[in-house]
Amino acid sequence: MIFYVENEVEAKFDFDIEEVAKTVAAKVLEEEGCDHEVEISLIITDDEGIRVMNNEFREIDKPTDVLSFPNVSYEEAGDFSVIDGEQQVDLLNPDTGNIMFGDIVVNENRVRSQAQEYGHSEKREFAFLIAHSMLHLCGYDHMEPDEAAVMEDKQENVLNLLGITRD
Image (cartoon, rainbow, N blue to C red; front, side):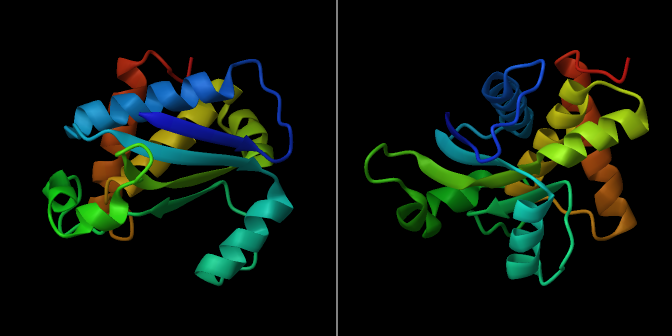
């Protein structure tokens, strides 16, 4: 896995942003059974940066905590066989041969405020947002209650396996 990190706002936490993001992303891919070599981009921004993207891509003119931009079009969440089909040519980075899996945008301000609101560490909140976004990159959504329950279970499972708990 290749993980690109662009820290637009020079956010500093008491953990290594790239290390935590790569660890969580790798665990999600492992748990989902994705054996493709992938590339993921992560942007760390602030309220204004994410508000602009949220407005541009979702027509919601307000900041949010995380945005996910999957490159893979799934017929069924977590079914990576679509990557081996017609999509593969469009998804391959010709320089690396890896699948360009998608992009994640995390709002530094929300990592801090939500960690405080929920009473856990900033590392835990950041890891949660990465797990959440990675599941979107794997084709999952949470528009319906049953979909949300599946995502919540998968997120908690990954974080528990990594020992990144609310404690």
